[in-house]
Image (tube, one colour):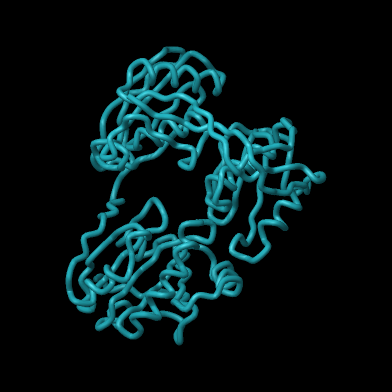
Length: 365
């Protein structure tokens, strides 16, 4: 365990803590963010673990957001663990425990030995019990000590090119898009297809794919580069789908299912501070606690956000009928009771349940 002092401590009896001073306890460092739904969903479990193991355990949830935002979160959703706001650009914590995806968990035993760096969903009573006994638990190793690097040689503008490779050791994974090209680095094949169809995992189906291939590991992760003369993004994506189905081991197709889903309908006009005329081609996403969607119909953008960020535990369909493309930008306290309904009302929308047919993505060989 490195000598690190954690600043801006909250829900604790002191304003900061040196990790070395916690020797004799198991420490769980949970790196999280207020906009990360899986992070928020894990807090009840972490609170239960803190209560179960008492003085033998100390859970510290560390965010790089402001102390004010973290304090507001604690007020909205109290949890009996310690919180910290580590906002320093030169954070020693993040230098020692680098991460890309959240939640990111580090477990340190009573002697100060790091026993696990893993995902949030792998932390449970059995794991903590093992670490208390000095046993290294059999959890996944979340290795995110990676660097940016070039995997493909880019082609000259106006040329068509398709190249696919396997897992690239030590290179940061992700997706980048330029005017006439798109690159995927170290992504599970299903994630690439889902991105091409603009769908989330809830709609993913496998057909005659071995369960071992459905898991994410080096053997099932790929890097892909596609460049085309076509400057229209949607036409480029359609061309890439055809290339994948022709030249990749895994194929894709759309299927239909019918069940109870959540539908979005229009009840009024949106707040003009949140919704502007479209003037950007960037995609939906988050930046710290801010959420944004660009160049999309409002109902379609919000349906994707609610379904794929886990706010609604269901398929979400846009039934507003409005296809006007807009830019949406907002921040909200998603952990607050009734916050989602208030947020939707400001957008002139509401949600309800209904039985509908919807698209699913089928991956097969």
